Length: 261
Length: 315
Image: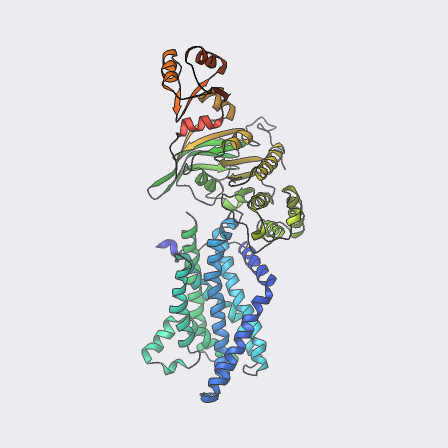
């Protein structure tokens, strides 16, 4: 049990793995830059303007403005989660890239840390791409919304860590569908994204706050984009930091157990 | 590269590149490597031969610091893989059995990206990548992605990749597996060149002609144990003799050889007689046994291998 909790020894070499993934991302930039742009437009039109024309306001906030931070937060979650599940699994299992890397001075801890950092960076890049769209529609306020960028990195790291735990224990690429549909999809709907969690029965509100990482990310994101800062932000931030640390550490140890035999 | 001699200037012995004592690797109940002891000297080509499942690849992975040993001691460049893996791996070149080139990059991109893992500055990495593409004759495929390469080209690129950091020790796990004769000869040719440049090479193979051609010394492994160790010529001489006489199996020949007190082995429809003098055996056969289809040939490593590891099929 202790092996899951021991803090892994990571060196600066982790950035080399990160840089490898960054290089591939920019080399195929056309396919990578479009999805977040399209995603921003789709959500804004379908839900923001479509549903928004009926809902109009939530607690005095225009509905489009209410969901704009959720669009960012969901994108942070999806890009890191899918990068570090399917993306990492393909690199690990099909491309054998991790095997090739650990034959160099890189350790498995460096490799997984690099993958996690890359997942977080991908989330951040997606937010960087989506922000101008949301600004252009006038649904988020500046300059506080710029803090969404570093927040995206932190949130991305959290979902990367969670994702990597699944990747470390999944028997095949197909079984990665379970966390996608049973965890990610419900989370995208019930974390105070498209309606406030106060509409949920009280028990589910507690569950959302205690167990759903996206709840905390959406809450901070919304405080930044409306803007509506409050002291609760610190509590959300601490929750995210703690959970990020836990899952990143466990994921590296699980991966080590899977790959070093 | 530092040209160390077997004895240093002060006369003290230079430690071996690899020193393994009672090296053991178990996976649950399965013992892959069963306490083997061997040493690899600087500048030699050292081979591991054995049937599938003999423990060759496990041994390679332990030396390459990617799989921890269960027990025993191991020093690579005098360092312990459990304690200083990064320092050891910085000086290793590894050709794995499984092709694991990066499909997201071109040939050049693979070499360049890999160099960066060794902390090589970009300009040095660039120069080295171009140089190695030429070394393995892949200049024309420089900007081609991996999936468009043939099997032989992939193996050559993997060899090039293993050389990006000017390794002091090259570890090759089945370097020519599944290649056509042309591609095998090119790889052998390159390895010979590396050998003459003083590189230390450890390789596994179950192609016995490959081992005989390349290795200065080798061990034959089976079921996790080392059966024998020596130079290819020594082993052939010691375990088989210099020549083999093959003759079609018939009751006459069998009784005749028994009468003449000549040891032999029946393998299907062929009788093999290992000997120092095929001429002598052939003469006895012709004079006394009325044989059919007598053929003599030099003994090879394959004869040693089959004698020691048996003829039973391995999975």
